Amino acid sequence: MNSEQQNVLIKGKREGLFIYFNEDCSYSDIINELTEKLSTNVFSNGQSRTPVFIETGHRYLKEYQEKEIKEIINQTKNLYINSFQSLVITKENALKMKQRSEIVREMRIVRSGQVIESQGDLLLIGDVNPGGKLVANGNIFVLGNLRGIAHAGAAGDREAVVVATNMDPMQIYISDLFSRAPEKDSESDGFNFDFAYVNNENKIVLDSINNLAKIRSNLAKIERGI
Image (cartoon, rainbow, N blue to C red):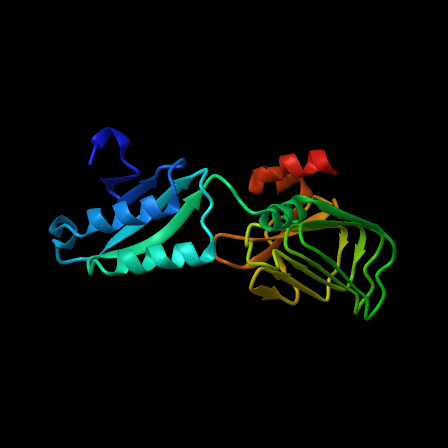
């Protein structure tokens, strides 16, 4: 095999074994060369199992192709797949990412029994009455009274926050955490515009809006979107 035309390049790093695929060759060439290289005894040495990171570049692997590669890797007892990394995504996944990055804007009163949901961040201009509910995979911003239920980071993001002009919720959820009446983390200095977040002890607490930028500095790009 010509070493200058490798379709599969294997490099050992501290994190594990990194396998790089040629973007231009056929998939069958990838499989043949991968099988050949892993058949050597050098990858069967050692007592512990080594994680494998597959880097495909601009090559997109279908589900059955990933499954086939996993089976080849698993045939070498000391190796296991940790992840597949690609520089390309499907149109479906791109649309999902776009939805998660968008801010849903609503101008209304959310009454008891009503629910507003968002795949990304949610901005409500209006009140949430007791029994009303807001659910967002991202952050929740309420320019009004929050007296109902708010669930931010619903898809598992504990970095999400709930912000309201008047914070008096029935319940607040952030990711998998729940609080019926979040405690104040600091004095709000008479300013009644609070936000809820998960602190270092994995508790939902309230703090003054003046500290939002310090505690969640990544929200700067969201503020520009609003």
